[in-house]
Image (cartoon, rainbow, N blue to C red; front, top):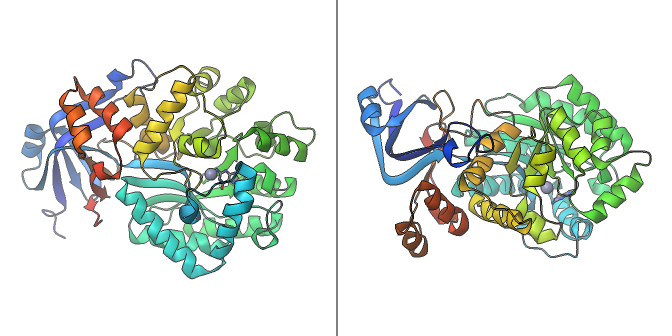
Length: 436
Ligand code: GUN
Ligand code: ZN
C-alpha cells in the first residue's frame, strides 16, 4: 500500500474523553463534535478535530463519510470467557452449582483443538459485531485453547489479552492441572504469545476456590518473573463462594488478602466482580493498584448481588473500575446491555450512572484495567485506530427518543438504556474496516 492510500479520514460525529468522568463533573469529561473527523495513518490515529480542520490536514487521504454516525473508540471488555459462548442463559441456583452443572462440562469439551478454534472464531466475530475491539479473556485449562484463541485474534489483528485457566482442585479431574503444570504451561504461553503482535498474556488462576495454596504461590512467582503480563481472577462474587473460600484458606483475613499474600495483587491485576468487598479490602486494592471488572449482567443472572459503585469508589478511590460482560454467566456481548445493567445496579443502591461514566468504564476504564490506556480505549492522537461507528437512531424507538434529546448526554443515555448490537454500524481494527 502506498503512502497516499494508507491515510484515511473518517468523518462523522466524534466522541472522546479529555479525562475520567469520575475526576470532576461527569458531563465535562466528554469531547463531542457534531461535524468531526479522525485522520488515520498506518493503523494509528494521527489527528481528531472538526471535519474542516482534518480535511485540510489530510488533503491526500481517502475520506469515508459516516454522516451523523458517532465515531468513538471500540469497546473494551476486560472480563469474558470465550469457551462459555454456548452456555449463556443456562440456569442454576447459584454460582458454584452453575460452575458444576454447566461451565465445567462445557469447558471439558475444549480438550478438542477444533472445538477451541471454532469457538474462538465465533467469539471474536461476536465481539466485533458488538463493537468490542479488545478484551481480557479466560480460555480453558488446556494450553491449546490459548493458542487457538491467539491465532484467531492475530488473524483479525486484534489487541487481546488471554490466559490459560489454572485450577487444581474443586473441578472435575479432567479439568485439573497442578501447581507445577500451571506454572510451566503458563510460562511457555507467555514466552510464545505475550507481546507477539498485539497479543497480551494474562496469568489466570480461575479463583481461590479452584486453586491450591501451592498453585497460587507458583503463579505469584511466575508473575514476579513476568511483571508486564496481566493477572486476572474472580473475587468476592457470591456470599456462598466467599464462605467456601475462607474455609479453604484458614488463617487468612479476607478473600482479597488471600490473593495479596500470594503476590497476586497490584498493577496489572484485574479482579472480576468484587461485589461483597469490605471497605478494608477496597482500600487495600486501591493502595496496591489492581483494577475491578464490574460485570452487572452476570451478577443479575447468577443472583450474586449488586455491585455498589459509589461505595467501592469511596473506600477505594484509586481503583480503576471497568465494565465487563463476563460471558457466559453474563447474558450479552453488547456493552449497551452491560451499561444498562450497571445503571440498574447503581439504581439498586439509590444512585444513578451518568452516561459519561458508563461509556468511560466501557472503553477507557477497560483499557486502564488492561494497562493499555496509552494505546486503546479513546479517540486520541497516537492511539491505535480501533474504532466503532454508532448509529444513534438504530431503532424506531431510539430514533423517537433521540429526536427529543436535549444534548449529547441525553443521546448517549438513550443508547445505553435501549441500544444493542444494531447500533454498531462499523468496526475498525487498527484502521481497517472489518467485514461483518
Ligand atoms: N468464578 C469462578 N469461575 C467462574 C466463571 O467461569 N464465571 C463466573 N461468573 N464466576 C466464576
Ligand atoms: Zn468470569
